[in-house]
Every structure is written in structure tokens, then in C-alpha cells.
Image 1: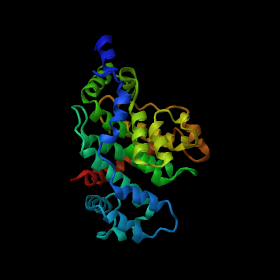
Image 2: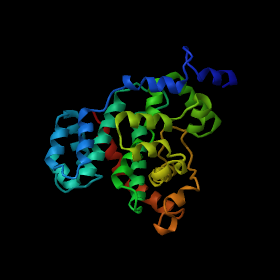
Image 3: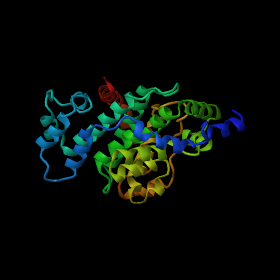
Image 4: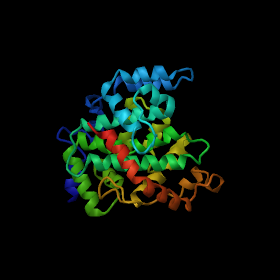
Length: 305
């Protein structure tokens, strides 16, 4: 690709920069179901009952079906089938159902978008689910990192890729091609050719959806956790989980092949005081590989129509 063609990618025919165009398109994208906003609001109140949460989810039949399929996956391994939302909330807990509701809605959202060549939705969600699982594993050792927020952050960390690919499909296809040919990280290619990247767009989407601040920050800074301020540990957990997942062979496309771990993350994760350090990468990778089949079954149920 020539320098002039790179410059051409930096603005569309109307002269708008790609980031401005993508952000302007957000209100044209499919919205999160009303039930998700209700669940987020309800789970933020300690006095909320399981019946109230179940009733909010039940207003959306598609979301209800997805959640029940996921709850009955091998990943959770319940001996008896869970047949009602109320059972799911009671058994899993409000926060787990909260994260599953967000995840199911995100899967539904992505299936409504036309994607260009080079992005396969199945691979995207398998990678995202694997990162979510690893992020949750890392978060279990952290004092100031909630497990449910870690899982959702891991699952949605690359949602900006889907939105960018949908909003500017031709330009993004060229970015993917450039990253593959140049053997550079996808973020590098995005920044070089579009003057933005999927972390910026993904965090904007998270804010647009009304996701909690820690999730938005983790999405925005999962490639630069030291810049995530008070949410650095969560961003660092996603960063490490992403590297572990790519190392285990799960990736969205050939361009996302980096297993680099920023050395700043170990301090953010507490280092040896919490048991999270470079030596733990092997344990996280071993756990991920042993659970990959269950994770893929979970995601298959999540994205099934």
C-alpha cells in the first residue's frame, strides 16, 4: 500500500475523519435492549430482588432465550437444567446474571451488523469469550477487581473492531490487509491509517450503551493499562488475558497476533503480593487451554439465533 493510499484512508469522500464518522454513526447502530438498562439499574441497588431482575429480563424474549441457553452450557456445568430466569438469578447471583445479560445483548448487537471480509463473527466471539475467561481467572486473585466486571471487560474489549468494521467496511478491510502484510499489531495499523483505533471506538460505544465506568476504562486502555487511572488493575487483567489467549491460538484475525505483555502491568496487578506476575502466565494459559471447549460451547450458545 502506498503512502498516498494511506492518506486517502484518513478521510472519507466528504472530508470527515474516520473517528468522527464512526462516532456520528453510533446513533444509527442497533441499540441495547431496554431490558439491559433496567438490569444495570436494578443490580446497582442492594435491595433488588431476584424476582425483579427476572421480570426485567423477561420483557425481552430474545434475551431470555439467549440467557437460558448460556446458563445451561457446559461452562457452568449445573447438574439439572435451569428452566426459568428466576432460577438463574437465584443460582448464579445478581452480578453474574448482570454480566450475562450485557454479554447476550452484545452478541445480539453484533449479529445485526454487516461485516467486511476478514472479520468472522464466530472467531471474534470465541476469542472474546476466551479473553473473558482468562480475565476472570486473573481477577480472582485481585482485591480491587470485581469478577463480573472482569468477565464483561474481557468479553467486550474488542467491540470497537466490530463497530469500525461495520461503519467503514472498505477502509477497515484495507487496515486488516495492511496489518497482515506489515506484520504489525492491529492497533498500530488502525492508528497509522485511521488516526484512531478500536480501543477509542470501543470505549465510546461502551459509554453510549451506559456501561459502568470501570468497563469503559478497561476497554479503552486494555493495550495501555498504565493510562487507565483508578481502573488500571482491571485494564491490566484484560491486557494479560488477551496476550495469554492469543498465545493459546485464539485470535480474531492474523493481524491480532501479538503476545506482548507491557511490563507495567505487573505493578498494576500487585506483583508477587497477590500472586499475579510473569510466572503466572503459564498457569493462566494452562487453565484456558483446559477449558477452551467449554468456553467455545458457551459462546456458541450465546451467538445462536
